[in-house]
Structure formats: C-alpha cells, structure tokens
Image 1: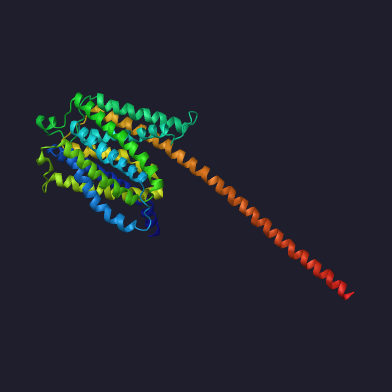
Image 2: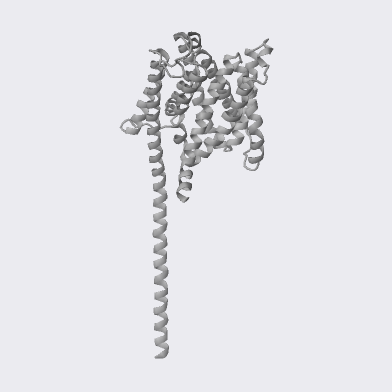
Length: 381
C-alpha cells in the first residue's frame, strides 16, 4: 500500500503535465474547427478573455485580498503592455496563421518559442552564455536546430505519410488538409511573429512579478485589459460586420468557453503547482507532446494530411528544443548549487561559532571551580 502511495505521489506531476498538454492540444483542434466555420479570430480572442476574466477575477478578488500590492502607474503601464503583447498580438497572429495553415503546423511552429525566448533573454542579459561551456553550446545548437526545423516545415513537403485511419478518405477530403507553399510561408511568418510577441510577454511578466507578486491578480488584470484592447481591435477590423459578433450554442461558443476556462484559467493553476515542485523546465519539456497529440487528432477529426518533410522538420524542432531545455536544466542545477554554497559556508561558520562558544563556556566554569578551591584552601589554612 505504501509503495502504491509513493508511486502515485511521484507520478502526480507527470500525470498533471500530460493532462495539461492534452487540454492545450484540444484547444488547437476546437479553435481550428471554429475558424473553419467562419468565426472571426478577432472576436474569438475577445470572447475567450472575457470568459477567462469572469472565471479568474472572483478568485483573485477573494484569495489575493490581503497580499495584493498597491497599484501604481508604472505597474499599470506594464499590465497594459502585457495585455497587448499576448492576448491581442500573439493570439490574433497565431489564429490567423492557423487559418492559412493547419492545426498541426501551428502547434509545431510554436515549439520555437523556447529558442526565441532564449535569444531575447541573452539580448536583455537575463541569460548567461559561456562559449566554452557544453551547456551553453547545447543551448546555441538547440536554438539553431529549432529554427532549421521550422524552416524545413515551412518550405519542404515531400510525400504524404499515409495513416491507417486516412487511407479510406476521398480526394475531396484530402484537399481540406492541403496548404500551398505561399500560405505556408505567410502562416509561418505570422505564427513566428506571434512567438516573438509571446517571448516579450514572458520576459515582461517575470519583471512585473517582482513589483506585483500576485500571480492570480496579475492574470485577472491581463485577461480584463486583454478583453478591452482586443475589443477595440475587433471593432476596427470587423467594422460594419455585426454578424461576426453573433454566437450560438455551437462550436464557436464551445471554443470560446473551452479556451477561456482551460487555457487562460485552469492551465495557469496547473503550471503554477508543478513549477513550485519541479520548476519551469519540467513543464516546458513536455511541450512537444502537444504537437504530437494535435497531429494525430487533426488527422482524424480534420482530415489534415501529414507530409514527410513536415514530420522531419517537427522531429528536428523537438531535438533542438530538448537540447535547449537540457542546457537550461543544467544551468538551473549549477545555479542552485552556487546559491547553496554560501548557505553551507554560513552554516559552517555558525557551527564553528557555537563550538567555540561551548568551549569558552566549558573553560569558564573550570576556572571558577579552581578559584573556589584555592579560596577554600586558604580559609582552611
């Protein structure tokens, strides 16, 4: 019984992060279906963050009431910029790129995000690179590999990879999953630009948390401001098209509800819990799993074709990604050991002080006892 409990305790982080990747993969599939049915990506982003705000805000108001810091103009400016970078720029470009390509292609292209973040962190001097270090070399070569894999997915096609559940599809069904080279390039550029915006968002979020260290309230503010800013963009882009805002009990409503609750609500909580125990590297290491799930599900549900060139490109992206994560993991271990060294030295110094104090205390009673015995001898004499 104890063995089973120990096994379950150790396996909970793995089960949680796999569940998270299945949820994120489901968002790609549902969103692609909604976009194929004519839903405006601008309106979709607004509805998604409106749902997320309604879900997250009550918890933020109640749970962060005593620890929420005072809002200042500098913090609010950062919050506004955060709400523009990810909810408005990144998500709109991502969904437009998905319109031009496929759900599998979009999910695979997002695997270059850690590499882009690494490059930008080096530019902002948030990441240290030592050319003679094997860890730094792994991060550099991994970054180059992810870029090469993304270019291969964009420019190469190759023969169709036949799967047993797609062999019976007709030519008309196959055409729904085919994208030409022009659309591939256009979609890749939009998704990659969105990844740059997301990388900026991650770096700015880390900086903002130093002055506003309440993750739940920060998320609520980003969703609220993202709804407002996204609404302005949607009103401009969909002006005169009131039908774009109509929503019924259909796939469009399900996509907004699912992505808002899970991808902007539950996912943040799961990631936070896992990061406290295993760190961010553990969470991001499973990111390619989402691409594999999307590829399989989209080939079944959306009848998307798989080409050998894109499969090879995705494999190179995964290899490069794990090289970057390996380098980051070792950096984290070395940083932890370096941080623990001063603590060990301090503990050692404190221990020496306690030992010395104990010796002094031990000597003092001996001197006092000797003095008392001498005085007693004098009295007797």
